Image (cartoon, rainbow, N blue to C red; front, side, top):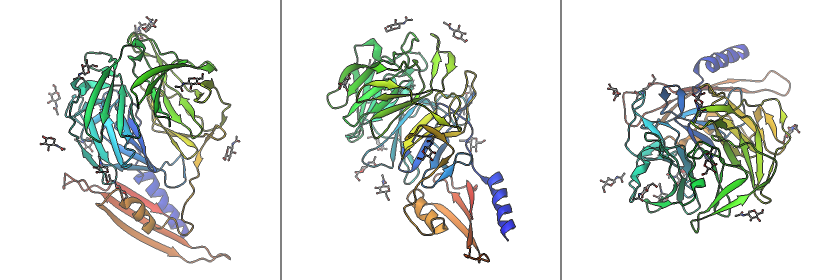
Length: 418
Ligand SMILES: *[C@@H]1O[C@H](CO)[C@@H](O)[C@H](O)[C@H]1NC(C)=O
Ligand SMILES: *[C@@H]1O[C@H](CO)[C@@H](O)[C@H](O)[C@H]1NC(C)=O
Ligand SMILES: *[C@@H]1O[C@H](CO)[C@@H](O)[C@H](O)[C@H]1NC(C)=O
Ligand SMILES: *[C@@H]1O[C@H](CO)[C@@H](O)[C@H](O)[C@H]1NC(C)=O
Ligand SMILES: *[C@@H]1O[C@H](CO)[C@@H](O)[C@H](O)[C@H]1NC(C)=O
Ligand SMILES: *[C@@H]1O[C@H](CO)[C@@H](O)[C@H](O)[C@H]1NC(C)=O
Ligand SMILES: *[C@@H]1O[C@H](CO)[C@@H](O)[C@H](O)[C@H]1NC(C)=O
Ligand SMILES: *[C@@H]1O[C@H](CO)[C@@H](O)[C@H](O)[C@H]1NC(C)=O
Ligand SMILES: *[C@@H]1O[C@H](CO)[C@@H](O)[C@H](O)[C@H]1NC(C)=O
Ligand SMILES: *[C@@H]1O[C@H](CO)[C@@H](O)[C@H](O)[C@H]1NC(C)=O
């Protein structure tokens, strides 16, 4: 019986575990205990409309990340940006980006903003007054939402005419209205930067590229005040950090911003190198420092990847690994308490009893999908060993039912719990 259970588990893990293709230039957002990924470039010519998330509700190892698939986007998507509503924290806004008819290389345009309700896996297009039509083909920027539910988007590039914009756009999601503020300084005309909202409602912009292709000085940090709509610059000190674009940044509880990777490019935008370093900016002292890193599960160079901070873990996912268009579907985890690259993520469970029963799985997922079909098969084996071991295996097959197309009935996921 024991052997059989292992055999079944083995077969299902090998054959049925859903794993996303390698990609980069996807958008991402941490929604509660789910790290979501939207679209991305999966090969030279193929842009994805898939939506995946990492289920961070339980401990896991990076060898078998807890991948889950969600409802696909209406369009294939790359180089856009996403942020999570601070009021309805199941709502994700996707702003800008390059959009294609799924499974083709044909550009398409329906809307520059999409709203994803992760509770019910639903995509909608908002009606926005005052929308700036230059956003119909803008990408390589980052959207930041503040506590008043206003989304701020600096610059970006017109991907057809290659115009680099020198403005900041403000999308107020409470009134569904849009405002464009032109900027005077050319050093704000940037793309592929990293943006972080500090608790004092300042957005800080780190790195990126200027219209003439040169990189932004990492010691000149542009700061935008989301209350007064004013700009300022802060000059940093400390370690020298190489200029870059397409890097990731996360903000820790104590105000440190941790950067990973990114790329350097020549003036025509071709990649010269992909970086694999960590740099940390302390936003109290405005000093850069390079921490001592340990651990053996070290990521490769990554650019146009995703990063999120969950508990004391910085999670990196996907990304371009070299200047040729090679990319990964691996994830990498940094313990930010001691800057160690680790393989196992320990997530404390709130419940002390039988955490792995199918009933629990149902309650974890019911807020997301009201149309999931569960079939659970439980096999119980009584203990022979002194202490008495109870093995419970639940074979869980559930089907993600497509809202619109009723004929689609493929089984998305099969998992086995033992
Ligand atoms: C967010 O929640 C408020 C209050 O429940 C609701 O009125 C509003 O429509 C929600 N917004 C979205 C985008 O769902
Ligand atoms: C795109 O291709 C995938 C895999 O070939 C297929 O599962 C999916 O249904 C296609 N999507 C559309 C919108 O045609
Ligand atoms: C994509 O574009 C090509 C060439 O313009 C066209 O022949 C094809 O019908 C288009 N495909 C779709 C799905 O629109
Ligand atoms: C999502 O689900 C949670 C918990 O059930 C609920 O509190 C919240 O209002 C829902 N949000 C939306 C936008 O439906
Ligand atoms: C957007 O506005 C138009 C015109 O007012 C209306 O017909 C349409 O239903 C609205 N769409 C949404 C999603 O609210
Ligand atoms: C839209 O953005 C462009 C580029 O910043 C700007 O020139 C134009 O004035 C904006 N349009 C409106 C209606 O604000
Ligand atoms: C690119 O533009 C910036 C800002 O205008 C300027 O400081 C820098 O010298 C320029 N670099 C080159 C290589 O022209
Ligand atoms: C800029 O840096 C200085 C320290 O060099 C700091 O006192 C100041 O608060 C910083 N400005 C902002 C807007 O955070
Ligand atoms: C940038 O790199 C590409 C590819 O290596 C090359 O074709 C192009 O000439 C380079 N541009 C400049 C200005 O060096
Ligand atoms: C880092 O911290 C984790 C737990 O917080 C510990 O297991 C690990 O051994 C530490 N690594 C180093 C190199 O100190």
